[in-house]
Image (cartoon, rainbow, N blue to C red; front, top):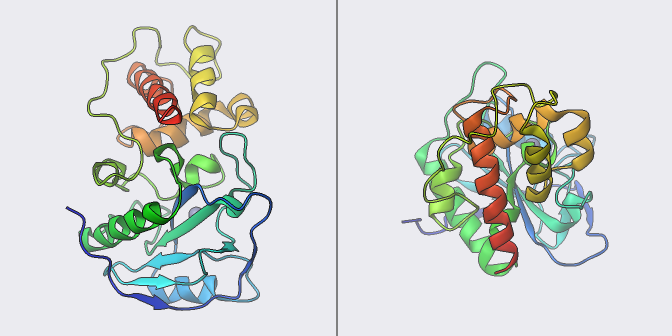
Length: 251
Ligand SMILES: [Zn+2]
């Protein structure tokens, strides 16, 4: 069970602007800070000379800092795309997790940090119409360019708490896919490319950098095997998530 929402400490950042276009906040984007410690992350996310921020920053010990008001447009997603949208910052809430990133190998997220994230995410979902298919990692909306929150982020337990998409069971390997590179024209890729676009990934990027998009998918839904290849289990999972996204749209 998710715990109680911890007290949120206000740590204001000046790095924000007005949300543009539609006023609805309907996406939640999860990041790692890629910094050695919390203070380094706070310094960067509040540095007026650095055009970066997020709405929230969750420390490894579970403390929650709020840097930007939810009504404002924080600068966390950058060049991004999801389901036809490019200005992800205008429609999303961004949560940074204090974590050193993956340059020296992936670092686990402490349970207390994940508990705070769960509680905060549930609180946010109660206040904004964010569908499960719009709970995403930075790597989902910027494949190839970003890899956070990385392979050790537990999307499954987050979904079990009601935040994001995760199936009850994964299907058996797809007999239609081969362990080939997605750039290959072998049977299977064209269907997978279509399904990845239906899930929300950028069609232009699927065509231009297929392995990066498959890696982004794997980082979220098949983290044990992030190699950018459309192997039979990855293909089966792409089909399963595409079906869940379609079902989520009809809710
Ligand atoms: Zn990020």
